[in-house]
Image 1: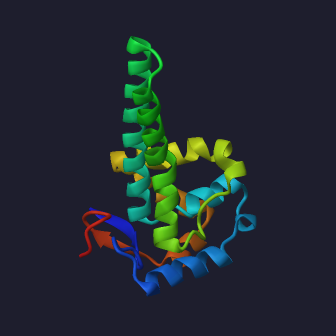
Image 2: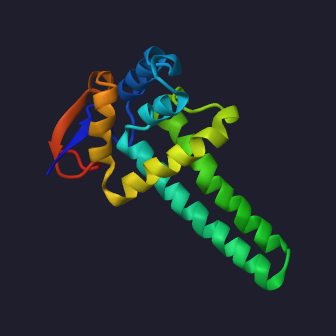
Length: 164
């Protein structure tokens, strides 16, 4: 099965790949899109960034669940607070750190957009975790055909994360 994969995607970014991402994000700003959320989808095409976001979301949800369950069973405690704060780290700060790691922080959304981008980021994560992201990306490119060139997307066989 063929998937679209950015040319400059790698687990450990190089100076060249980070510079490429920063330049793309300088050119393709939110004003080039019909909505801020469309831009938000655009900045999350890189599979490594998306997988870090998705894993962070899953770990965050698990920790939120356990902290809520413990709160319900035993009441408020330091353990509940610690689990919740670690969940916040995984759900929110790990993805934020991934943007600094992969694109120098040039593709992160601003804090004032947290609520409006919460549903799209969950949507992106679910598409990534279920293997349906490539199909969704192809539909997105109908609306924004410049996505292929902006990300230097290539047809590849196999996994998003394994270079072939």
